[in-house]
Length: 574
Image 1 (tube, helix red, strand yellow):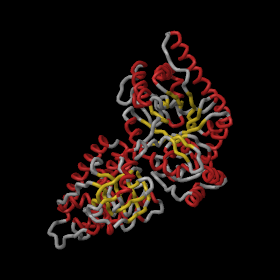
Image 2: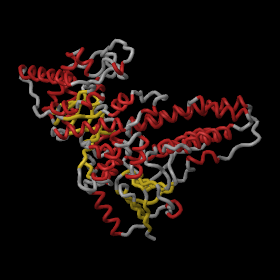
Image 3: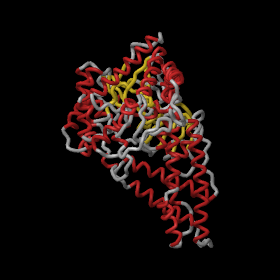
Image 4: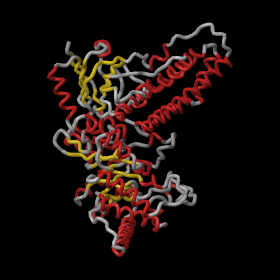
């Protein structure tokens, strides 16, 4: 009998297949395992068995990370590397050992320790942290399965229907066999969802009742963008779905580089890239342009800085591969937390406020000019932008432009071609740059806001410092006022503004950024489908109203409350 289910679409795409009911025990039930009683094992034997299981689980996780890195991407592989770190946490071991010492069997001790840890995460106010509870359960089940000698490998095919999936279960799905995923539970920032997006598998979460209702092998149609599943669809519905699947705009190959709000406004979406290989990932997620290329990939593992010719070849290959779309290259951002042996920088007492990025370039002008020449030359192969990080004064910007003019003059003298149609932008990541946006807007072609550093410098807090992490606040009104000043001044001068920091891919931040006037969001490619869908679910008028209210707030908490009330579909992401 035909039955329509609705849920939350978290990975776009159309699929038609047969129901495959996930038969493995859900990971979250790790605490409900059958436990041994009356074990003769001594505490020492049990603790040794724990250590061996951890070693075995760690090897399996790192193998899974390696295979994920090669098949999906290094970003997704970090999920399993993070699992490995949790598994090796001494606090977890103490939790297990204390239970063994109190008389629990090994399995009981492991199950109780992971259940306690999972409950801690599940009770947190932050939704993102609550969703990490499934990761904890996943790790616990992995260890228990090793001890029990059971196998978690799956052989799924068709449309996977499950109560929930652990990240490690999603990671082993074969995208050539699995057409879609439907979960009764799950959250939009869950690692299983992130992996499904990266694998290009359409997915719907929060679909109550489907596990009980669907039968193995029944035909089912899935729309991962609309969040709809039709069990036993009609022949007409299947034909329509197949037409959409064959359309060039269907599924993960859809062009997501432009999101259109409900009232018709367009927002550009581009990708952050760290290597030339990332072009494959941005295409896989429907993007066409690079909004920020971190050129430091050329410096990794090098004793000497690559020559202009080598840089030219690397940049040109990327530009040609993206043509006619744009590649935006950030000049070397060296210093602070980015040290490379080929560009030695004397130790400083406070490197984040020291000689880094263009400041180092001014001390080593031959280094900066070589890169500028290589980038200019690459522009004959397509559309190129250059953005300069750590601009603090208008004097620095003018000095940069003098270097560009000098590089062009040299190329002219040497009869080496370059395009005059190349945009030069100022990266805004220091509050002073945001506050002189009127002056930068008159002279730069665009501004790209690096929110990672702008937030840190505005709140004077290192986001990697666990004692200060609470001060890393993308929605702090002070940060929003700086961004708003940039968009107002840039638009007044006929220029555009992008955001390339992590905030560009955070769902609760995006509506405010767009409402403040940001024209382009550049993000990790895997986040594009969710951000694209979010933008298209809102109107520009709603987001502008939200942003103006946010500017009048006293705290980030107040802004978050506004966002959750005005745009409840914008949930927190990592």
